[in-house]
Image (cartoon, rainbow, N blue to C red; front, side):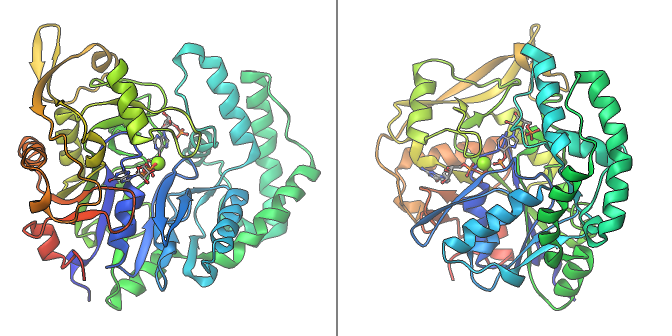
Length: 442
Ligand code: GDP
Ligand code: IMO
Ligand code: MG
């Protein structure tokens, strides 16, 4: 039986794009399997490996390392066309996928009507739109909960697939027409076309729960790769400006078919500042020229949609909240180098709403929108940190900045990323997690 502390979950602390891909890629060296448990191709994890840039959307980052297996769990929603395109793109870059990719036979399928219903729903919301990635994620999870979803296992049985499809389509057409005056999807031709592409996913299908349990029983280490972030989680995020899945660490258990006590520890990835793409509250947002500077320096443009990301400052109440709902054992702080040129760096310490100060994260998006943030101004270090690999090499003020964050959040820092490349990382060797899990450079 494996040592439970061998398996680790990596989650986003903020609103996604924290650099989870980069951190998972670095950590993956120490694991045998990397498993995604939620979300879909709304995710965009940018990783530089062997001098090439990869944007992984559906396939776990582990695929980029030889001899690692990448697992897509039942909690993920799969668009077969996107998955096949991603496999092709990876293989065209000289990385063999083959049997190193395992896809759950219980994952829900994103269908064309999910994307068109999402587009219609967003348009109907007008100014209140969520600003989704338009990948059909929300409507697919709606149908999963509504018990009218189609799953990857249905692709194993062509006749059954067509039958189930036509039953669902009749209902979808009625709903679509009534709500949005939308397109109609009935018709065998469309279903046949979808099936012809989707069936190519069948060779990758397996019972992921069995696969992971067998691997763990043999002593293999599993890294659970979260997509999105805590504040986009459907239960714990800034609802309704969230995604439709459980992006927090708890989602890793149902999202893979592994019991929660088998996941030993959770590491939370956070930028040294903050960003958000799409609508919704962002208390520490910096709207002026300074925000613009962060965006330019940090190249803060969505990797999936190309949208400019909103930029702001590290938010202590939000990070403390993420620490609690995920039970974070450690933090990985990314993009420290982006702050290098700043004279002073604000850190959001407390919220104030209607005269009351609070360190907790409120449930209502409306309160977060209006909350005033009290900041602590920390002095900048104004020296390059790009590519540094030792904590002691960091300017004293950068060290102080990191210590301040860790003290405020009350979670130790295990890793600091100082650039997008694999080797641009500092391991904090006295971190309990790094020692306990025997991580760090081999
Ligand atoms: P994810 O969705 O959480 O994996 O994050 P994204 O890949 O969407 O966005 C993070 C971006 O920051 C990517 O373009 C990474 O290459 C880049 N990145 C990650 N860590 C660092 C870092 O420490 N410094 C710099 N300059 N870029 C980084
Ligand atoms: P990674 O894994 C940042 C945001 C969208 C929108 C909201 C709902 O790269 O961190 P959806 O299409 O999921 O229904 O959109 O969630 N969003 C992300 N923002 N990074 C992501 O993924 C995101 N995935 C979804 O912008 O605000
Ligand atoms: Mg991303």
